[in-house]
Image (cartoon, rainbow, N blue to C red; front, top):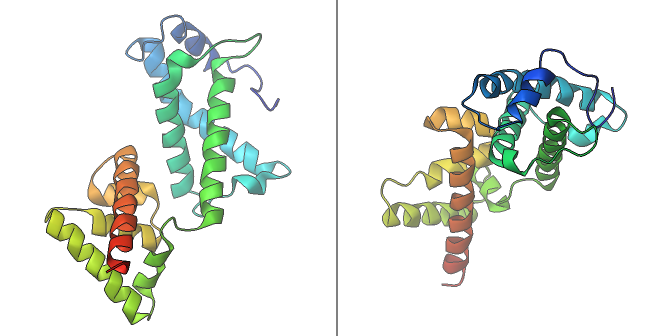
Length: 198
């Protein structure tokens, strides 16, 4: 299997090529591509992991994190389809594989860097002062908006829940969970700075 694309798939490539003529996901070909794409991406991800140097695509939970990577790749493919440009023998499948590779590398990079808000590790430690500081931040968040889910999002983050698990618990999409978690992290940093300076 070539790194950029792989052998022609008689089940996937013909509908993908027809889909590229109008790039309308609502067509029968577009729906068939969406149906088959997760299977192709999962197979490709496992192939990347099995090759020399495959540990650079490491994920912590082989099931949950791989599902997250596939969902994120499909989301990016859907959003960027009109930017796809065929070059030479390049095909839709190879383009989707490049996006998958980038998603996996992003996940591995985040894993190596650790939590984006390190102070949240103290939620489950015995450092009373920091625990009280975190609780003060959460209280401020709830004062600003009593219905805020920021504290719960940040607790999930500290607990190491995958995006798929967190989204399932809150009953929202993975993409929405990620967006709200990033906003919660940003507001946490702002309040952390404000309270430290008091």
